[in-house]
Image 1 (spheres, rainbow, N blue to C red):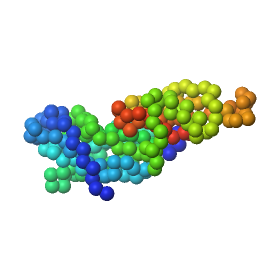
Image 2 (cartoon, rainbow, N blue to C red):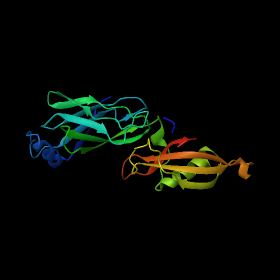
Image 3 (tube, helix red, strand yellow):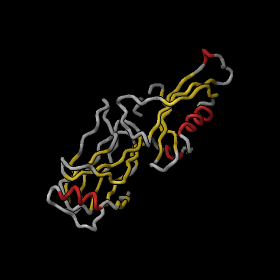
Image 4 (cartoon, helix red, strand yellow):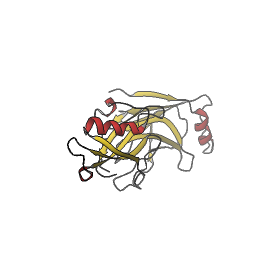
Length: 215
């Protein structure tokens, strides 16, 4: 597939999960603590890095990764260690090789169970989030044929994602479409495109991520 301000706070009520992970290291946080995760910026372009700040975690060392993020060879991006600055764990997130939406995952110590931080890093081209949204992911592919390609849909089917693509299937879908253009209705004139759709969160509607000639 083609590789195509102020901190914004988000408070995650995950004290029990963090406490369980920290207790194994002997550094238990306060029982009423919550994890505060800040991303700057929360939306980046391809190959851009976002900074992360995690507070209200009274244990360490703390590591972070982006679930489903891969490098140019399709290898999962590794965990990154955060450094403690005062009472805040800070660092820079890795840059995924593919556009998409990536859950932020934390863990206390290299052997502890990862904890979903409740934040999503969005790697998108400018204007992506302004595109029309649809309840069904397949409707995005139909919209692309009709509105972007100005064609007539002939066939549409879900396509299995390539091995290098590890993005969350709950947030990303891949389709292949066959279509014709006005005045070119013969079978030999049919065109094809792979349509990747995404949603901005697990309860959000679907939008176009990108259209490519290869999956």
